[in-house]
Length: 280
Image (cartoon, rainbow, N blue to C red; front, side):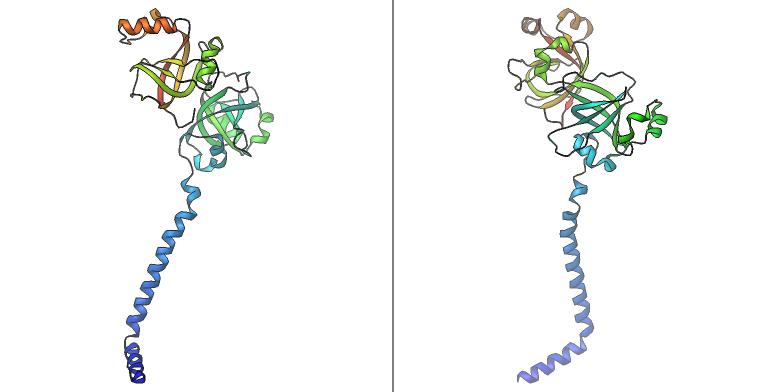
C-alpha cells in the first residue's frame, strides 16, 4: 500500500513539476525580500543618524562634514585657539577624540575671542571642506596661507554670524563685561510676565540671578520650562528708554514691578527667540 502511494506521488510530482518549481522560486524570492527588508535598515543606521542643517555639535560637523557640506549650521562651543587674524577653532572636550573645527569669519564684522576660556561662542555659517583659494574667491577674503596649512582639505565653517554665548548666570553676575555686545544665550524659560517679557533660569552659577529678557517683536509664543536660544544685545534696565523705543504694552503694575526688581540689573533685548536644539 505504501509503495503504491509513493508511485502515485512520484507520477503526480512529475506531471506538475513546473507548478511546484514556480511556487518554490516565488517562496524563495519572498523570503529574500523579507530578509533584505530586515537587514538593510540595520546597515543604514549611520546614514539615518547624519544630522541635518540647524543646531549641531562640533563632533557632528567633524564626523559628517560630507553630508553637511553646503548646509548652514549653528554650533555653540568653546573656542580652542586663534588661527590668524580672522579665524579660530572650536571644539568640545566632552567628545573625546573630536578634532577642532576651523571657523573663518566671513560676517564682515570683527570678532574678538573671549579672554575667559569657559565662555562659549555661537557660530552660524556654511560647512565645507576647506580649500583656501576657493574660500578667498567666493567670500572676497584675503587669508594668509601659512595659518591654514594644517586645516586645508578638512571640515570648516565659513561664518556669517558669530556671537559670545555665555550662560545667563555669567551675564547677571558680571553684566559690565557684556553690555552693548551682541550675544547668543541659551536657557530655560521661567517667570513669563507677558508676551514680551520673561526670564532665563540660572541654576549653574552660585550667587547668580535669572536673566530678564525683553522680546519687543515676539513671533511665536514661548512656554514655561522651554529651552530657547535668544540672540540680541545686553543693556542696562532703563524703563524710559524701552518705552520710547518699543511698543511693549506694559500696564502700570508690570512697569512698577519690573523697575523695582531690575532697575540695577541687566536686561537682554532680543531680536530673535527660538526653540533650541542645543542643551543649555
